[in-house]
Structure formats: structure tokens, C-alpha cells
Image (tube, rainbow, N blue to C red; front, side, top):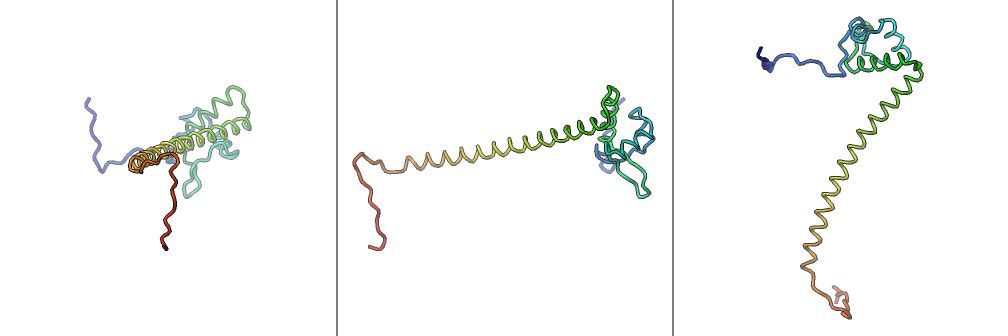
Amino acid sequence: MVARKPRSGAPRPPGPNVPVYVISVAAELTGLHPQTLRQYDRVGLVSPGRTGGGGRRYSLHDIETLRLVADLTAVGIGLEGVRRILELENTVAALRGRNEELIGEIERLRQIADLATSALLEQRSKLPVLRRGTTISRIDPDR
């Protein structure tokens, strides 16, 4: 079977944060009961999108979070512990992102410092050589 190249006008699959899955599909994908998903929403472990009528819509990211919650609760971690773990996971992800930004900034500043150093070294070769004991006096422009 040959894979077809999608047409330019063909719809693309939704991104990982686009809420598209209704609660029954999310329940099936996670192996959790829909009532459990509602409870996790109420306690703030996951915050699905909402339709105009108030129906829940889950994203792929929500589904992954729900699977993680299911794994953690299966090993005996309570919902408050799960909430704290999720907060820490989000903090770690944010810090990793910030760390990458700072690494990029350091690299940019290194490049600027290298250019400045090169320019100074180039200018240094054009300066007159001073011998020991030589004094430099300022030239007064008003004289």
C-alpha cells in the first residue's frame, strides 16, 4: 500500500492541546469510568475544554494526564498526592523550557563577546606602542 500525500486543502489532525474527545471517548481511551473523569475535573486534576452547551472535550494532552493519574492512583497515591505530582511535573517542564531559553541566551551572548573581543584585538594592533617611562599627556582642544 502506498501512502498518499495529503492535499494542501485536506484537514490536518488536531494538535495535542486541542479539545476534541467527548467524555465517552476519553473514558474508553484511558480505561476510566466517565464519572471518574468528572470527579478528576471537579478536583482540578484535569481541565477539559467545554462546548457552548457545557459538555466536556478532552485533548490528547488531557488523555495523557488522565492515564498518568490512573497509573498513580493504581499504585496507591491519593488524589492530593497526584495533584502535587502533576504540579511538580508542570514546574519541571517549565524550568526545563526556561533553562533551554537561558542556554540559547548564553550562546548568543558568547557570540557577541567573541565578536567584541575580535574587534578589540584588531584595534589593538593599530594602537601606537608605548615604551616604559613614556608619559601621555592630554591634548587640550581649547588651546
